Amino acid sequence: MATPVLEIDGLSKHFGGVAAVDGVSLSLEPGRIYGLIGPNGSGKTTLFNCITGIERCQAGRVSFNGERIDGLKPYEIARKGIGRTFQVIRVFPELSALENLLVVTRGGLAEAEARALELLRFVKLEGLRNEYAGNLSYGQQKLVEFVRVLMRDPTLILLDEPAAGVNRTLLNDLLDAVRRLRDRGKTVLLVEHDMKVVMGLCETVFVLDHGEKIAEGEPGVIQTDERVIEAYFGR
Ligand code: ADP
Ligand code: MG
Image (cartoon, rainbow, N blue to C red; front, side, top):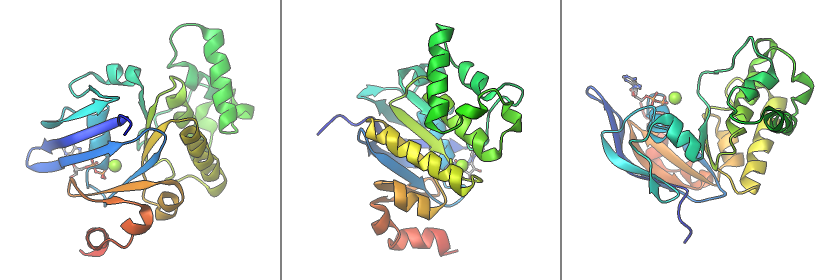
């Protein structure tokens, strides 16, 4: 078996008395799309924060391409090849779409501009490259944020509710872009509430409830899992 891209083993993160992430283990293989679902407050964003070094976990380990990364700083983890978007949009409204991508570059500007334009084209936004990001629709801003993550060519991409608030057309562009990334060998883990999106996109789904992983499997199987139904509807 290939080395997992990401391996999480017994990860726990508590906030005071709240176990936001509680002994979670999971493994991601290269070139696949994974879903992370669970009711509000089940620990999805906290898990992303632990993977990317924004939160320090109290127990467990995280390995990326076979190398431990828990304890590293967020920028160190990003440089190793993990990119993420945030649940709340973080674009610079007073910079153009293009400039929003250029802010994350180091080194040659010409090269960075070429890459940024290619990425805007990737999500059909090249025509809006000089528009202030603040003037773009919510969905377009989310696409800008998504491709900004790709500027450093990460091997693992974490997307926190990428589809929320995005209209159908832009959503299809986004989903299509995610599939093309997978076809290029990237690994994607996305938090998503829309089960139609999860069903159509993800090969394997992890389900969190109260910080614990309660199920893992193909989306079709997950949907009929007793514990999953209980977590979503049983209260
Ligand atoms: P999800 O993304 O699945 O909605 P979160 O990871 O945001 O869930 O939250 C999981 C739990 O941890 C919730 O009970 C939430 O209130 C708590 N939590 C998250 N972040 C913090 C924080 N910085 N301080 C205290 N509690 C937090
Ligand atoms: Mg969240």
